[in-house]
Length: 320
Image 1 (cartoon, one colour):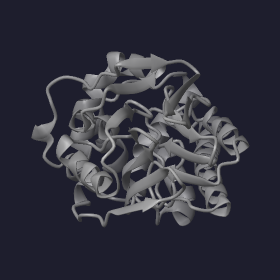
Image 2 (cartoon, one colour):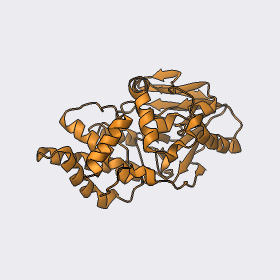
Image 3 (cartoon, rainbow, N blue to C red):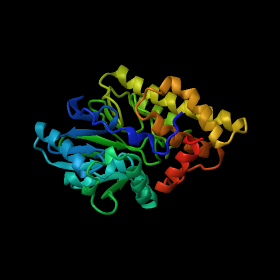
């Protein structure tokens, strides 16, 4: 267990190797060794970008890669959820529409400012050139509930809410014609799910809803693109097992009358052998266990993380 007053992520200073690859006829993946991914759909007459990177300066690299393969206009930006690391680069794309679920919009209203301050404090490297972020929040220009269908020429693109998981507003981007999915942080691969705003009881069921689509290829929120049905299944299974293991261990600790600190220590010890090699494991676990403990004990909905609450939580769990 670490004995440090700085977030585990502050030690993560090494630049990651970016991969930009085509995973189906119209879908591309921008991945970076466990850093937040961006998914791209290149349609007949326009481009859609799902998850924008954390700053306009970082988004510029995504745009550069897109321009290497197409000169079609970037018409749509999709926010799969509200987290700052996913949305604050949106202004760089010059999109006609920024699309999100109504639930995501509501979360930005309720806690966007606090989340922005919280995440920038937690992940310094991921907010490279943060001064390029415009003042205020990144606001969707169009929202939907449940399902929205877009047509990029003759290419059908569906935005789907398949259930709560990583947040209550999670949206996936689905190409039914080629069974390609951009999952946002509902699915991770070789990377620890951040679950500070999660619904642990719902998340496994939402993953089953994704699996029912039978995707052949998938861009996860973090980790390598999943380019075979077998790899997709592995990503879904690993994510489901992690969430289920956290929940089971927290429930066990609560049933034994343990407080949050004791539950954290026992859950960390139980999960470290299986998941400790995953990207951002040490960083995510305090947030994940705190949220799960809240859900199991008394808070159905996630409490707002503020920069101050982040520090208090980290000190109380990691400096014992």
